[in-house]
Length: 388
Image 1 (cartoon, rainbow, N blue to C red):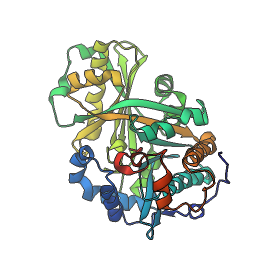
Image 2 (tube, one colour):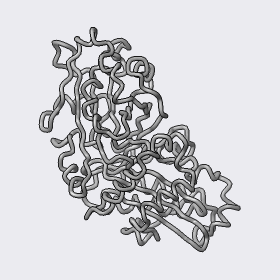
Image 3 (spheres, rainbow, N blue to C red):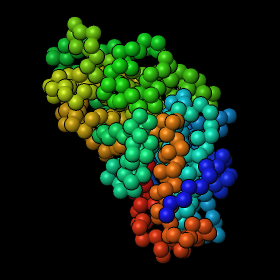
Image 4 (tube, rainbow, N blue to C red):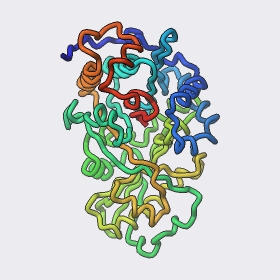
């Protein structure tokens, strides 16, 4: 039977540590635990030195821009960690969960991360990206809306594609018909069309969490925090209009951040928001027009590509018009501050169900391996980590 416990107010209270592990050692743990899959390694390996430097810089900030929450018991050979980076001014992205030796460590880092967020002023939202095919993911993060309610949570699933930046052929794709599309960049303080369109097509929770509704939708204030440690974090917004019309037809949000914060480069994604009822031919013209403008934001991106987030039904269009390649499908789970406590209880209850009745304290790694038949190793270790 699920029993609620007090929500504590510090990492130490959960037996975990903040930024206590060297980044090089942490990346080694990721590799040893199998978190770095072959497809991630293929595009990440050339940039690991840069990624390591970016993590070190962000962790050294007065208010850390990257947090690594870890739990380790060397005597039992167990380790668990989860990282979080500051993606918007008042929101973070939890990611890279790994755990081996003792699921109680996983429980500790997950609950500690939620608890500290509850007790910190100014936090507006949290998010996690995961592969919807992962059973653990759907049981934990796919249930966000059920846990916190539709007014405080959402889950959006899209295709994650890779688009070469320096491939010039797609820059002029469908150029003749694209004369019917006008694309404008939306600067800070001039975002009424942007807010209305994004709220309608991505949802008000998503728009609030991504701070599209703020005057500083370009994240200038957050960028200043990153600049203090020699990094950048900003976003540029582009709106496509039909020629002769003042009504938006689609939006591109070009996110830029330190390379390698996320091993799929989610920190540098370009998110396309295109209405589901837009005819395919028009969608092709609009997408090409938007990317033709947004590509300027990626000229200096070391990976030489645009990580493209797009609705599943438009993957064939993006492949045909742009030459983009599908990387994988991702779901983005978001929960707002009003749902932080409910999300904590959701996680607590999930792990409580896994723990045998009568043994909710002092359960060691050996006991877990013998008795935790409800959760296979693939669900609690990083070989198929639930978080991107």
